[in-house]
Structures are given as structure tokens and as C-alpha cells.
Image (cartoon, rainbow, N blue to C red; front, side):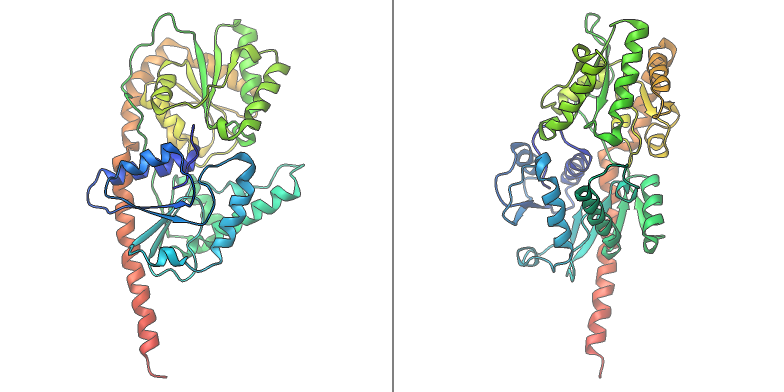
Length: 395
């Protein structure tokens, strides 16, 4: 459960929302496994939402994340995959270990294990010019995903992710459950935006290359060229831990002469994010690839239009309510932004968006995982009984 302070990435949001959903049930005893060292205040507050929860610290690293430490964390997880369960964890009476960071269960685990896969992007062919270091890290990630078959139960956050995972790891065929990420932001009921607020389009999530920063900024520049400086572009995400990504956004914005219209707010809280969704002209989400697309659900929950890449994962998130565009075409994205301002479309989303988003609740996600935990425990008990019978059999 190691989450950086400030804006959270997708896996951290999943971890946070699942913890909250399980904490509210009252029929699950929770234990948080964290890295030894200083914990971010947000993580401390989250763990405290389950007052009876226990905490186990492993290793000697700080829980705070940074862009530069990403490769070291990935290599450390890869090494952990090949080791037995740490003694500290063996001494804790747990029934299920649930890992959400694409790390496969350690070898010879005495308890049931569940792993959640958020995407299979590591299996994609890296773009030309990818460094050798990054290619090695991708191989480590692929290895960890392949080892997910060790788990007693495997979940994926979308049908798209489940299907692609099985394509690359055939041994998981018939074993992957789909559990959508549940969402909950403060005061998500739609409300009118103040008349004097500045119009803006919104992107949520760090604009790394697969999120298509070039397409988004070129499309926004085209929108401004056609309509004048009538709106800003707000990019909200975990930029505190990814300053280089924020810097690249500003460089491209300056090249396109729109830097004065592009804003990257610092440390967006849940409440602030809810207000950003509610007040924007549209969420613009032109990713090349996604495991699901939770910001689309969150935007629709506030009755806000979505301009999204026409890819299967995003269609799972937004259904028939999304405005789908070609992520490779800034013209297509800009046209989608124009359509999102149509009053008739906005009324349709204001009415239908919150209804659609109800199926992606934290409570439903937690209920699905509790069922998976029970199945995983039953499988582990059968496996352990089989091993004991083999040991007791006469030579």
C-alpha cells in the first residue's frame, strides 16, 4: 500500500478505493503491508480509516515514491518474485495476500494469494528509440505478469485487460475475474458551475507518452486557433512525483504558443478533483492505450462530457456516453472538444452520466473482491491438503 503523496496514479487509486470499500464492510480484517520508513501523511490517514487494521512494514526503503526511483522499485519487485515469503510476513496470521502492483506472489506462500492486473502494456512493442535500460525494465515487468499464474486468484480491471493478459499468458485462460475499479469522490452530485468561472478542458492522470500529450496539446492549439482563447487546459495528475513529465508539457505548450493557457495544479485533493470535473467543459482523454479509464467514469459521475480515444478499454468505462475520437488525429480530438460544448449533448450527459457511473461503486468492487478472496482461500486449502497427502503417502 505504498502511495506517493499528492496526486495518485491508477494503481494507487485502486489500492485506496479498495481499502476504503473493505474497511466499511465490517466483515473483513485488514492488514496493510507497507515499506519500512517514513509514510506519506495521506497513506497514514488512509490506513486509519480502518481503525482495527494492522500494519506490517517490510524492507528498509521509504514509502515515498519519486520518478527517479521507479526503475529501482521495479527491479526490487522482480527480485522479490523469486524469493520465499519474508519471515516477517510468515509470522502474521493472514488468510489472503492481495497484491495490486503487478507483483506475482512470492514462492512457497502458506496463505492464499490474489493479484490484480491493471494493464498489459508491458507486452506492447516499445517505440523506436526506447533505451536499453527501459527495455530491460519492460522485460522484468513482463516476467512479473507472466508469474501471476502462481496466484490462487487473478483479477483484471477490465475485459480488455483480461483478454490481452490471457493472450500473453495463456495459462491464465479461464482464471481471470474482471472487477472494475470503484470510484468515489466528495460531493459527486452534479451542480451548476458558477457563471463567472473561466471555461477549461481537463485531463486527469500524468501525461506520459502513452497518454498522448502531443495529440492533446496539438488538438487544444487547434481548438484555440478556431475559437480564440476562450478556454484553458488543466492537467491534473501526480506531477509532484513526475516533474519531468510536467516540464515536457510546458515545453510543448510553449512551442505551440499556448503555454499561458495550460495549467498544472499542484497537489489536487479529492475534493478539488471533484470540483475540476464538475466545472470543466469536458474531460479530454486521448490515450493511445489504457487498462481501463477511471477518469472517464469519474467525469460521467459528475455529469461531465468525455472526449475519449476510441479504444476498447475506454468504451468499457464510458459506454455509449463518450465522444470517441482517433487519438492519432489532433483534428479528430479537436472536433470532439467542439462537440462536447453542444448544449443538447451536455444535457444528455448531465442526466445519464451519474446513472451510468453507479455501476462502478466502491461497495460493489469490495463485494466482488471479498467473493474472490473466499474462492482463493478455498483453492489454497485444497492445494495445501493435496501437498500434505503427498507427504504422508508411503514411499
